[in-house]
Length: 260
Image (cartoon, rainbow, N blue to C red; front, side, top):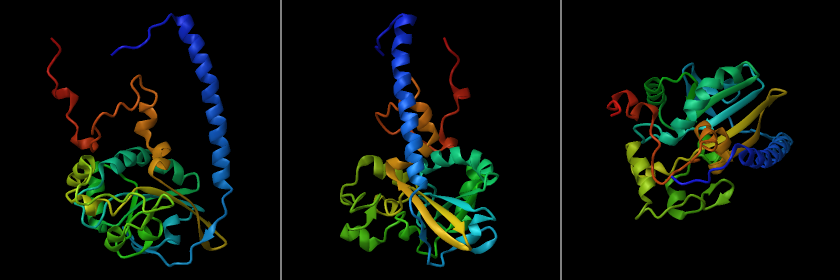
């Protein structure tokens, strides 16, 4: 690896210049967060129902007494054998702070289309404890752009990230990375891509549920803890190929031979 080497004085001069840009980014991020909160709300008219560990429950019941609800649309379709590795990486992060949110009037759930028993078995495998619900018998994922039907896939018209036809691929020759991710979930590329990642926000006010915000694709970057750390590492994301695995699939560094 080659990289410019400088004295501490020259490094500090460059660091202070970068600090000004970082402060500007924080201020702009604060302003963007305020605009997010200022979006109008849309009342949820459908009676969405989910399979949970307490049985069949409505969207309002998922609030668990809080006034705010965040849902991560976890890619785990009904024909998957295991959850998406990338979504699993994001879940590794929010598993730890879900309790903090719950004690700050915000309930966090993952929602997927796989049957509940498969979701809970995978959660146990991963050592997670966050709330997870199945929308397997409901339109929830489709209505919030987290899933598409086979017909939409054939026609290439389904929206994603508010753009019609986004995320459509050549099913006859899917990208190698996509095919590999699908195989890791025990399915084929066409089936795998019918579920997509996303996050949606809801509020409970005057007895009614309101949709407040949803984000998809690169809009999830800020929620993906590992990338926030990599962006501050010397080599950044450094993604020349597939590297991310489920956390229980990495080789244990303790198995490395001793140095020398």
